[in-house]
Amino acid sequence: MLRSSSNRIRGALWKLAIGVTENRLEKLERLREWQQLDPEETRQLQHDRLEALLQHCYKNVPYYRSVFESERILHEDGTIDIKQFHEIPLLDKDTLRSEFEDLKSDDLSSRAWYRNTSGGSTGEPVTFIQDEEYDDWGRAVTSLFRCWTGYRSSEPWVKLWGSERDLFDERKSIRSRIGDLLRNQTLLNSFRMGPEEMDEYLDRIDEIEPTFILAYVESIDELARYARRNNRIVHSPRAIMTTAGTLYPEMRSTIEDVFDTEVYNRYGSREVGDIACECSEHEGLHVSVPTQYVEILDDNGEPVEPGEPGEVVVTSLTNYSMPLVRYRIGDIAVKAESSCSCECGWPLLSEVKGRVSDVFIAPDGTRVHGEFFTHLFYHEKWVESFQVVQEAVDEIHVKMVTRNSDELQSERKNAVIESIREVMGQCTVTFETLEEIDRTKSGKYRYTVSKVSDINDDY
Ligand SMILES: [Zn+2]
Image (tube, rainbow, N blue to C red; front, side, top):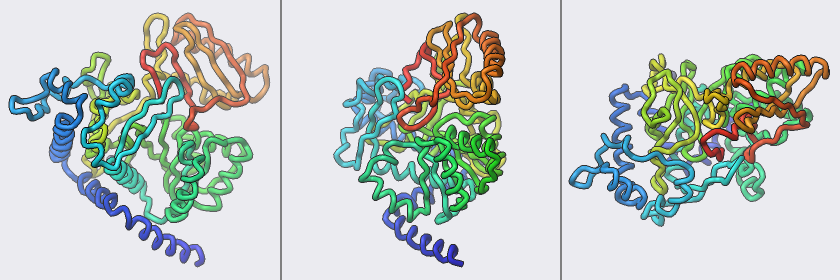
């Protein structure tokens, strides 16, 4: 009784709070309509939105004006020839840094813009500009994805998250605490995941009884494994959405099993926001076509066939302050060979395989995806967490947090070395046991790091 009346009050406050973001609600409504379009209408919608962005780039963004002229992306009358879109050079992080000034839109002063920065676990972080319009679209997409799980506004939900910005900025934290209350949202800090904190988080989840949990994939996987080891029965939410990392099949099955629920995989990045998410059919991740134009390309920059892995190149259709056109986001994904059996007409990615820099290069040139190592270590019961680093082409270093006896470890270590050599060829494999594996600035683990990968990774 008490609970239902407090939910009603929260619901009313929530509506009051979102009254100020009418713009976002309107966008959410448009997204809901657009997801019902048939494939041809969806293609037309995306074509129109891409063309509008490119016209803006030509008119207002010096970098693109000069690229479009030199690459002949224009009709004679000065309008964009969208058929030539694939001739636009790919944009990488180095270019984003070096051409920063020329990538800004001329009309920036008329836009509510702000700076954003991507994590930067290695190397220099990359800075880019976004604006309120982009942010409203992004939040509308996030809301839509959450609705796909059956979540209804004002229901209690939990966010297991590790962003430094979200959690440690004191000024923000007061504002966001009020926001959390209105949204019925509880934040659990994925930066601190020792046994004590994990017990506390599981208690909080039991107490709050969230219908929805949004989490860093590695963090919720870690929490699920901890609950399983300690034989804890945990509250079962209607859905768990994982993001900010690769959801390997082993992780999905652990999380679904421990929390007795469905996992929804969401894919996105700091530079362009949410890109794609699973619907309740779980047949792949629907690309948010009104906000993102996604290409999957091979090493020569040509589109790969559906079913084949390739590099993700994305054009954000909503950030007019600093348009990112054909941006190399640094991930590998696969376009689905078929469409989803749900009613949403947005095309599917069948899989997001992780970072380009997760790919190891064997001495004979063979590319070995980091997923191999995740498979290798995930079910080794003596390994609590791990990070595999390719230091040189013939040098693999394994950082581990271990448990169980030394005897078991040395026996399994030999088996692991053998498996690695089978795939990588002749190489040295070294092990280092640590108390804890370093996380990235935003609190994520990286399971694999290749220092010989040809992509400079600032994730
Ligand atoms: Zn679907």
